[in-house]
Image 1 (cartoon, rainbow, N blue to C red):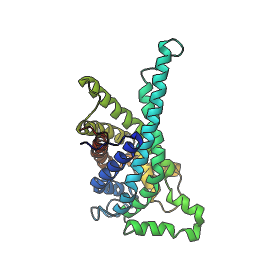
Image 2 (spheres, rainbow, N blue to C red):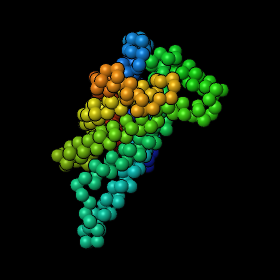
Image 3 (tube, rainbow, N blue to C red):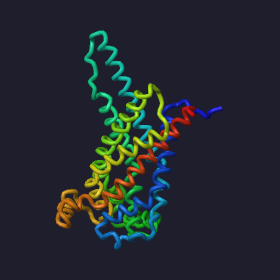
Image 4 (cartoon, rainbow, N blue to C red):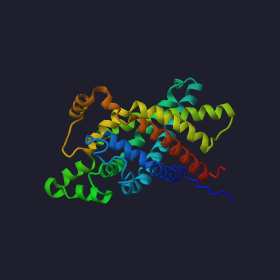
Length: 291
């Protein structure tokens, strides 16, 4: 007898938690190398190839809830917008409304993915701050990095501590929202194309993984400059504006500075897209009782 979860929100929650934990643990060393390539201390000054699992504790804590929040929000908003589009289509059939355009569905995916990212970043940003400081050897472990941040409360107060733990919030959203607005419509579009070609309702985890890999690689390459800015901001000890960081990066190496780490980023996210969206589809199918 197949295991089945009836609530679509529970399906998204559990499948997202499985996907987030799976992808973050399996590709953590590549993420560490990417962070060190983007560090202002340089690759070897930030640890080189040593201790590539530094900071993995914070990833373990943040992966499941962050991904679960994303997919619950994504699937919920997508469902609401789909119902509205279908209602508009029914009204258009009787001449009381305009028929939704061809771009309606991709725009729905963009909106749903954007909302999902904002929700997920509530968990992801503090996790990233702690994780990247451990990865760049600014602290010996995730716990030490977290303690060093919490110790700042004595000198900067609770408000300052809150800003420190959410350092890079704006630039993270500036990176993640465009990324998901590219990745998820591509992923959903390729899935729909595959289902239409085979005249089937479902899609396998392997197919989802392949489409996720392609969509992730495209989105990763396009958003690398935003990723460089986000990493630099999170690793800075003092407060820095995005405009100042842009000028510093340009002074260092011109346009090339904004694409530091692009090869491991595209490699990591291409593989990550396959693992993340493949494992999500596998868990989602399993929870729906689809073999």
